[in-house]
Length: 483
Image 1 (cartoon, helix red, strand yellow):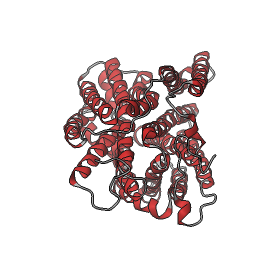
Image 2 (tube, rainbow, N blue to C red):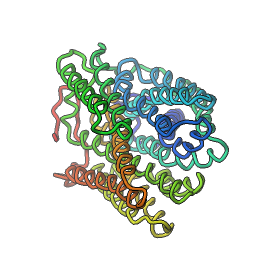
Image 3 (cartoon, rainbow, N blue to C red):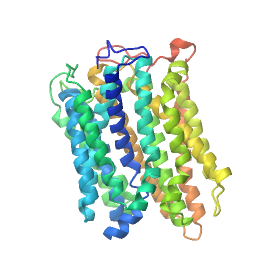
Image 4 (tube, helix red, strand yellow):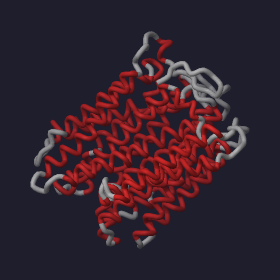
């Protein structure tokens, strides 16, 4: 593997380079898989371990807390300590936590294992992405590599429910144990195919206060929105937690403006494409996590479908993402990321609009399959394009930062929107469950329309091939496009 300045830009990559890329793709597939795979298994986990509904949500939320709360720290740690080193250690922790999660017989220990897995993913995901973006030169080579990488992440998330449906038929513990051998194989392969090499690291210096304040802010924010449906959005606990998150975030901004070696160089947020990419992932991931939760309630609790039937309902979207996402790099080269994001955002809104027609006897041919296909198109187009747009033009020593920002946006967006959707769904009356489902899906639909408007602003001034390039954002260099 070579540095980005000398990385191959032709179509013939060496076997070692392909092997390294495969390892990174396998790990991000596992990270994304873990976000959604536990969904279908939740009823079985609740029955087996005797968990209450409020405790059960923490099987999901524990992972989100660890992942979303520590992503910025994980990305910057990779920049400072070395991407390969951080990647290997975090992957080993992920394997151990997966094994423990599949063996425990106590709900608290299961939640703790999920939290540790989330923490490890917060370090592996930005480290893996920054390894790719510093290995492949910006342009066709990087776009092609990122298309494989993001296809793996999108496929893992989309196919998580499908795989979970099959594994839950064997027993819910298999949803935790299945990643263990894959993680071990990936770790052994990483030791061999991610060679030690001199990396361009960020300037020395640890912004401990910045790390503490931003991590504390993200943890409090995620905790607040996860607990709000039970505690109440206007309860003193929720208000106090949100206020604490805001105060810590303000302290973080003040710290970053004053310290010599900031955890986050705030100037990176002056780039319009980077800001739009992060907002886009908040909406894409957040709206789909909320929709997924509603769909699970609709299919399993209202229609009384089995875990396998529910998994098959999501299969069209998962297969579409898995098959087509690897071609998105060439499409980004030809049309530019902004155009792909616009089309993907439109497909996302149309997909949710289809599901607003759900009733007590949904049609596979006219409702479920077309709706899932549209959502699959949205993910296949938008997810790779957002990743490319969020990292293009960023200096090598800040790729971990850019990756961490993007992943944080997705996870925090997922937690916030899920909490809102849950509140809307549970506030409905039992006499009109269809109305409650439609109201909850409407939240995702409105967000998708907001995302489309944001994406359309990225088309301003796009004329000709030259305009398809993403503006460069690097330390001490001018930003070519601002918000």
